[in-house]
Length: 261
Image 1 (tube, rainbow, N blue to C red):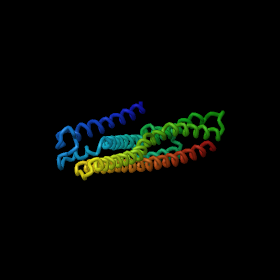
Image 2 (image 1 turned 120 degrees about the vertical axis):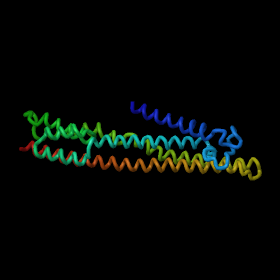
Image 3 (image 1 turned 180 degrees about the vertical axis):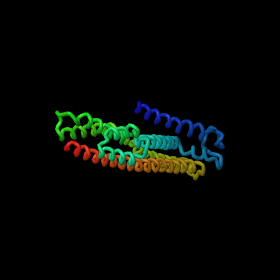
Image 4 (image 1 turned 180 degrees about the horizontal axis):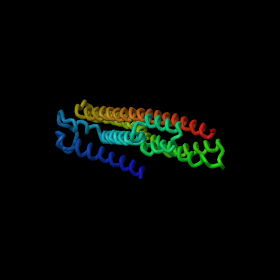
Protein backbone atom coordinates (compact mmCIF):
# COMPACT_ATOMS: atom_id res chain seq x y z
CA UNK A 1 0.00 0.00 0.00
CA UNK A 2 2.84 2.38 0.91
CA UNK A 3 4.66 1.59 -2.34
CA UNK A 4 1.45 2.37 -4.22
CA UNK A 5 1.25 5.67 -2.34
CA UNK A 6 4.77 6.62 -3.43
CA UNK A 7 4.06 5.69 -7.04
CA UNK A 8 0.75 7.57 -6.99
CA UNK A 9 2.44 10.68 -5.60
CA UNK A 10 5.20 10.61 -8.23
CA UNK A 11 2.84 9.98 -11.17
CA UNK A 12 0.35 12.60 -9.96
CA UNK A 13 2.94 15.34 -9.57
CA UNK A 14 4.52 14.57 -12.94
CA UNK A 15 1.08 14.96 -14.52
CA UNK A 16 0.48 18.19 -12.61
CA UNK A 17 3.95 19.61 -13.30
CA UNK A 18 4.22 18.77 -16.98
CA UNK A 19 0.63 18.92 -18.18
CA UNK A 20 -1.37 21.17 -15.88
CA UNK A 21 1.27 23.71 -14.87
CA UNK A 22 3.70 23.80 -17.80
CA UNK A 23 1.38 23.08 -20.75
CA UNK A 24 -2.10 24.20 -19.67
CA UNK A 25 -1.33 27.17 -17.40
CA UNK A 26 2.03 28.49 -18.58
CA UNK A 27 1.43 27.42 -22.16
CA UNK A 28 -1.93 29.12 -22.42
CA UNK A 29 -2.00 30.90 -25.83
CA UNK A 30 -3.11 34.09 -24.09
CA UNK A 31 0.36 34.30 -22.55
CA UNK A 32 1.99 34.65 -25.99
CA UNK A 33 2.08 37.20 -28.75
CA UNK A 34 1.98 34.44 -31.37
CA UNK A 35 -0.80 32.52 -29.57
CA UNK A 36 -0.77 28.74 -29.99
CA UNK A 37 2.72 28.82 -31.54
CA UNK A 38 4.00 29.66 -28.04
CA UNK A 39 7.33 31.12 -29.14
CA UNK A 40 7.02 34.79 -28.17
CA UNK A 41 5.68 35.42 -24.65
CA UNK A 42 4.01 38.73 -23.96
CA UNK A 43 6.60 41.08 -22.40
CA UNK A 44 6.39 40.83 -18.62
CA UNK A 45 4.25 37.67 -18.73
CA UNK A 46 6.07 35.36 -16.30
CA UNK A 47 4.17 32.08 -16.98
CA UNK A 48 4.65 32.45 -20.72
CA UNK A 49 8.31 33.34 -20.32
CA UNK A 50 9.00 30.33 -18.10
CA UNK A 51 7.12 28.10 -20.55
CA UNK A 52 9.73 28.84 -23.18
CA UNK A 53 12.18 26.85 -21.07
CA UNK A 54 10.75 23.66 -22.57
CA UNK A 55 8.98 20.62 -21.16
CA UNK A 56 11.90 19.86 -18.85
CA UNK A 57 10.78 22.87 -16.82
CA UNK A 58 7.60 20.90 -16.12
CA UNK A 59 9.68 17.90 -15.10
CA UNK A 60 11.67 20.04 -12.69
CA UNK A 61 8.48 21.48 -11.25
CA UNK A 62 7.28 17.93 -10.66
CA UNK A 63 10.54 17.18 -8.82
CA UNK A 64 10.02 20.19 -6.57
CA UNK A 65 6.43 19.16 -5.80
CA UNK A 66 7.50 15.57 -5.10
CA UNK A 67 10.25 16.77 -2.78
CA UNK A 68 7.84 19.02 -0.87
CA UNK A 69 5.34 16.16 -0.55
CA UNK A 70 7.90 13.79 0.93
CA UNK A 71 9.26 16.51 3.20
CA UNK A 72 5.78 16.83 4.68
CA UNK A 73 5.45 13.03 4.87
CA UNK A 74 8.80 12.71 6.69
CA UNK A 75 7.89 15.52 9.10
CA UNK A 76 4.61 13.78 9.98
CA UNK A 77 6.40 10.44 10.39
CA UNK A 78 9.01 11.92 12.71
CA UNK A 79 6.30 13.60 14.75
CA UNK A 80 4.45 10.30 15.06
CA UNK A 81 7.66 8.47 15.99
CA UNK A 82 8.25 10.83 18.91
CA UNK A 83 4.89 9.90 20.41
CA UNK A 84 2.41 12.02 22.31
CA UNK A 85 4.85 13.73 24.64
CA UNK A 86 8.48 14.78 24.81
CA UNK A 87 10.43 11.53 24.24
CA UNK A 88 13.33 12.63 26.45
CA UNK A 89 10.98 13.33 29.36
CA UNK A 90 9.23 10.01 28.74
CA UNK A 91 12.51 8.09 28.79
CA UNK A 92 13.64 9.81 31.98
CA UNK A 93 10.37 9.04 33.80
CA UNK A 94 10.21 5.47 32.50
CA UNK A 95 13.77 4.68 33.57
CA UNK A 96 13.11 6.19 36.99
CA UNK A 97 10.12 3.88 37.46
CA UNK A 98 12.09 0.85 36.30
CA UNK A 99 14.89 1.73 38.72
CA UNK A 100 12.31 1.87 41.52
CA UNK A 101 10.93 -1.53 40.49
CA UNK A 102 7.66 -0.17 39.11
CA UNK A 103 7.62 -2.22 35.91
CA UNK A 104 3.86 -1.94 35.44
CA UNK A 105 4.08 1.83 35.80
CA UNK A 106 6.85 1.96 33.19
CA UNK A 107 4.75 -0.13 30.83
CA UNK A 108 1.77 2.16 31.40
CA UNK A 109 3.96 5.13 30.46
CA UNK A 110 4.86 3.33 27.22
CA UNK A 111 1.19 2.76 26.44
CA UNK A 112 0.43 6.42 27.06
CA UNK A 113 3.42 7.75 25.10
CA UNK A 114 3.29 5.51 22.03
CA UNK A 115 5.66 6.19 19.17
CA UNK A 116 8.88 4.44 18.19
CA UNK A 117 10.74 4.77 21.50
CA UNK A 118 7.75 3.66 23.55
CA UNK A 119 7.08 0.66 21.30
CA UNK A 120 10.67 -0.54 21.64
CA UNK A 121 10.74 -0.01 25.39
CA UNK A 122 7.41 -1.75 25.82
CA UNK A 123 8.64 -4.77 23.87
CA UNK A 124 11.69 -4.97 26.16
CA UNK A 125 9.67 -4.60 29.36
CA UNK A 126 7.02 -7.11 28.28
CA UNK A 127 9.57 -9.75 27.36
CA UNK A 128 11.50 -9.26 30.58
CA UNK A 129 8.29 -9.66 32.58
CA UNK A 130 7.56 -12.90 30.74
CA UNK A 131 10.92 -14.50 31.63
CA UNK A 132 11.80 -12.82 34.92
CA UNK A 133 10.21 -15.42 37.17
CA UNK A 134 10.71 -18.38 34.85
CA UNK A 135 13.12 -20.84 36.55
CA UNK A 136 14.10 -22.31 33.19
CA UNK A 137 15.91 -19.09 32.27
CA UNK A 138 19.22 -18.13 33.81
CA UNK A 139 20.04 -14.49 34.51
CA UNK A 140 22.09 -14.20 31.33
CA UNK A 141 19.42 -15.86 29.26
CA UNK A 142 16.77 -13.49 30.61
CA UNK A 143 18.82 -10.52 29.45
CA UNK A 144 19.47 -12.24 26.12
CA UNK A 145 15.74 -12.75 25.60
CA UNK A 146 15.07 -9.13 26.47
CA UNK A 147 17.76 -8.02 24.02
CA UNK A 148 16.24 -10.21 21.33
CA UNK A 149 12.87 -8.54 21.84
CA UNK A 150 14.58 -5.14 21.60
CA UNK A 151 16.34 -6.12 18.36
CA UNK A 152 13.09 -7.34 16.82
CA UNK A 153 11.32 -4.12 17.78
CA UNK A 154 14.21 -2.03 16.44
CA UNK A 155 14.11 -3.90 13.13
CA UNK A 156 10.42 -3.06 12.82
CA UNK A 157 10.51 0.54 13.98
CA UNK A 158 13.74 2.16 12.80
CA UNK A 159 13.36 1.45 9.04
CA UNK A 160 10.21 3.59 9.13
CA UNK A 161 12.33 6.55 10.21
CA UNK A 162 14.57 6.28 7.14
CA UNK A 163 11.84 5.38 4.66
CA UNK A 164 11.51 7.69 1.64
CA UNK A 165 14.74 9.54 2.40
CA UNK A 166 16.05 7.83 -0.71
CA UNK A 167 13.43 9.74 -2.72
CA UNK A 168 14.86 13.05 -1.51
CA UNK A 169 18.45 11.98 -2.19
CA UNK A 170 17.46 10.81 -5.68
CA UNK A 171 15.73 14.09 -6.49
CA UNK A 172 18.77 16.00 -5.25
CA UNK A 173 20.92 14.17 -7.80
CA UNK A 174 18.49 13.81 -10.71
CA UNK A 175 17.15 17.39 -10.59
CA UNK A 176 20.66 18.71 -11.11
CA UNK A 177 21.20 16.38 -14.07
CA UNK A 178 17.85 17.25 -15.65
CA UNK A 179 18.58 20.95 -15.19
CA UNK A 180 21.95 20.48 -16.88
CA UNK A 181 20.27 18.58 -19.72
CA UNK A 182 17.79 21.40 -20.19
CA UNK A 183 20.62 23.93 -20.17
CA UNK A 184 22.46 21.96 -22.84
CA UNK A 185 19.36 21.57 -25.02
CA UNK A 186 18.63 25.28 -24.71
CA UNK A 187 22.11 26.24 -25.85
CA UNK A 188 21.95 23.75 -28.72
CA UNK A 189 18.66 25.30 -29.83
CA UNK A 190 20.09 28.81 -29.62
CA UNK A 191 23.19 28.07 -31.70
CA UNK A 192 21.27 25.86 -34.15
CA UNK A 193 18.87 28.72 -34.84
CA UNK A 194 21.83 31.03 -35.34
CA UNK A 195 23.52 28.59 -37.73
CA UNK A 196 20.38 28.04 -39.81
CA UNK A 197 19.54 31.71 -40.25
CA UNK A 198 23.08 32.91 -40.73
CA UNK A 199 22.11 36.08 -38.90
CA UNK A 200 21.52 36.93 -35.27
CA UNK A 201 17.85 36.31 -34.49
CA UNK A 202 16.91 37.92 -31.20
CA UNK A 203 13.82 35.73 -30.90
CA UNK A 204 15.62 32.45 -31.59
CA UNK A 205 18.47 33.32 -29.26
CA UNK A 206 16.15 34.43 -26.47
CA UNK A 207 14.13 31.21 -26.70
CA UNK A 208 17.24 29.04 -26.53
CA UNK A 209 18.87 31.04 -23.75
CA UNK A 210 15.60 31.14 -21.79
CA UNK A 211 15.35 27.37 -22.03
CA UNK A 212 18.91 27.04 -20.77
CA UNK A 213 18.55 29.46 -17.86
CA UNK A 214 15.13 28.36 -16.63
CA UNK A 215 16.21 24.73 -16.60
CA UNK A 216 19.36 25.67 -14.71
CA UNK A 217 17.30 27.56 -12.14
CA UNK A 218 14.73 24.77 -11.86
CA UNK A 219 17.38 22.11 -11.40
CA UNK A 220 19.15 24.11 -8.71
CA UNK A 221 15.94 24.88 -6.83
CA UNK A 222 14.88 21.22 -6.81
CA UNK A 223 18.34 20.04 -5.77
CA UNK A 224 18.73 22.63 -3.00
CA UNK A 225 15.34 21.81 -1.48
CA UNK A 226 15.97 18.06 -1.61
CA UNK A 227 19.54 18.26 -0.26
CA UNK A 228 18.59 20.48 2.68
CA UNK A 229 15.62 18.25 3.54
CA UNK A 230 17.66 15.05 3.21
CA UNK A 231 20.44 16.32 5.47
CA UNK A 232 17.94 17.68 7.98
CA UNK A 233 15.98 14.44 8.29
CA UNK A 234 19.12 12.28 8.26
CA UNK A 235 20.45 14.27 11.22
CA UNK A 236 17.10 13.97 12.98
CA UNK A 237 17.00 10.21 12.46
CA UNK A 238 20.57 9.78 13.70
CA UNK A 239 19.83 11.79 16.84
CA UNK A 240 16.62 9.86 17.42
CA UNK A 241 18.33 6.48 17.04
CA UNK A 242 21.10 7.60 19.39
CA UNK A 243 18.50 8.54 21.98
CA UNK A 244 16.89 5.11 21.60
CA UNK A 245 20.26 3.38 22.03
CA UNK A 246 20.90 5.29 25.24
CA UNK A 247 17.47 4.31 26.57
CA UNK A 248 18.08 0.66 25.65
CA UNK A 249 21.42 0.70 27.46
CA UNK A 250 19.85 2.14 30.61
CA UNK A 251 16.96 -0.33 30.57
CA UNK A 252 19.29 -3.29 29.98
CA UNK A 253 21.49 -2.25 32.89
CA UNK A 254 18.47 -1.99 35.19
CA UNK A 255 17.23 -5.42 34.17
CA UNK A 256 20.72 -6.92 34.56
CA UNK A 257 20.92 -5.63 38.12
CA UNK A 258 17.40 -6.87 38.81
CA UNK A 259 18.19 -10.43 37.66
CA UNK A 260 21.17 -10.65 39.99
CA UNK A 261 19.26 -9.77 43.14
